[in-house]
Amino acid sequence: MGGWVYILASQPNGVLYVGVTADLVRRIYEHREGLVAGFTKRYAVKRLVWFERHDDIVAAIGREKAIKEWRRAYKVRLIVAGNPQWDDLYDSIL
Image 1 (cartoon, rainbow, N blue to C red):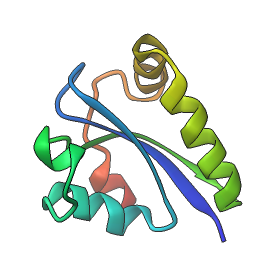
Image 2: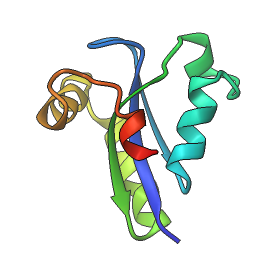
Image 3: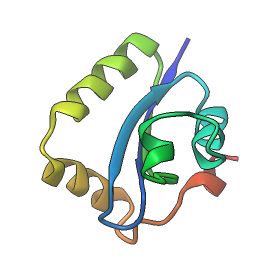
Image 4: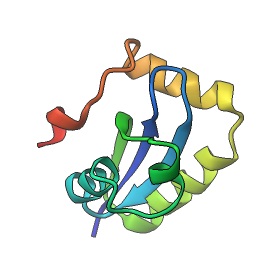
């Protein structure tokens, strides 16, 4: 079973959240609709700005943990490299 690593932002250069899931569409929908209690709901972090597919969920979890340890500047560079306008990519995964 594969997995996805993703980064959400509250706005361009705003609050960031790194997550992992086996079902990207469902999980991002939950964040956007405020169905997930906690950090993303509290800080209105709903914009999907980066995601990456992994064939193995264990690899996805490892990548998520690594990215979470990165300094903010590295996360921002990762986002800007693939999404310089910080567009919400949710529609591209539907």
